[in-house]
Image 1 (cartoon, rainbow, N blue to C red):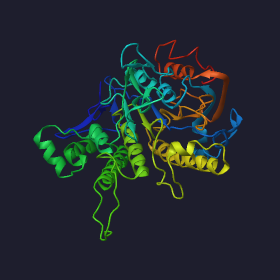
Image 2 (cartoon, rainbow, N blue to C red; image 1 turned 60 degrees about the horizontal axis):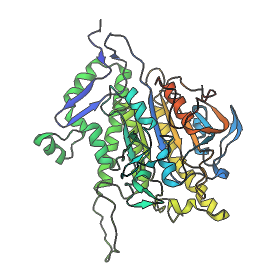
Image 3 (cartoon, helix red, strand yellow; image 1 turned 135 degrees about the horizontal axis):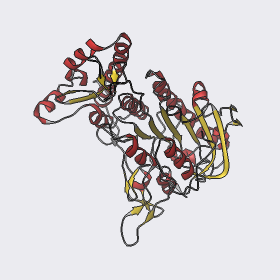
Image 4 (cartoon, helix red, strand yellow; image 1 turned 135 degrees about the vertical axis):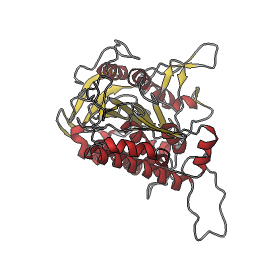
Length: 438
């Protein structure tokens, strides 16, 4: 029998214009009244254009390994990671490699049609298993809009996503932080909701009465968790407003160059865009609004300018084609180290959220990597891959796992599926599971 002060794990704070999920609290219980363990989550962080072995490859195997230059910003999470080597992508070229990253099947054109076929992706299969109770089964985010036209015989749209909801349905991720936030927390339904939204009220204002009632039941520890969560929601809202509605400057130049603005709703500052998306993804996992999510740093042949990094110029894709010139290699490694530094902030956020039996990171597996190794030649062998967290005890972390040469990407995905309880003996191009990944 449930105690009267208990609330269910799936409790939402609701009001006209808002639906706010809650983080894990001590006062939560299952339908039967017993306390329940936090759910397992799965996240994919995808970086296009690969990593050069000189900057990526770690020294040593097992627990005796030393992080490389690019991974060094993640040193504090050494005991929370599994570095993987010798896993191969079945694709060839930018777009096929990207499309196969989560499906382990390169795309092919269906005869006589404009439809392309790959396979349902790892995240969508996991979402079917993990996302039945969540508001959003699978949250797909990106920092760059989908590409247009064709390249090497493939639509660029196929290189603009890593997620496929079916064999023939690539899922284009959301690039607008504001739209993503609204989908997660704010429900613009009806005239009253729209009117409130115009006033830029915090989503927390919508559910103020529900918050007051909840805090009457909460323990001291729960109140601290709730305050941390509310502060994070407010912080994201403030950053969104500043990024999308910048303040008027006191001085304006007398002339302006011709500027091509990015699509509406996308921050001009790429680094700020990334940080907003990371914060939204963390909030979605923290509140159990979703248990499966992904973030793409760019599309397969991203033309993202690198002017957001001091002293860097050109585009990400251009820098990856270093032609083995030492100066170009240095820029390529420096760029990828910057990305790892930003990723470390997201991992730190997950590790800071206490869920009772461990942290949000402990209850997640975050897969970070690229669909190719050296971007200069689009090398699909020995993919750069790291897993963070253990998914609630599913992985032994703090090691470098050097798999057998020629291990297939489908083998990794099949192994992860089985660890999450999905009954399957085949995925993509798999031949079997990676038995050492225990």
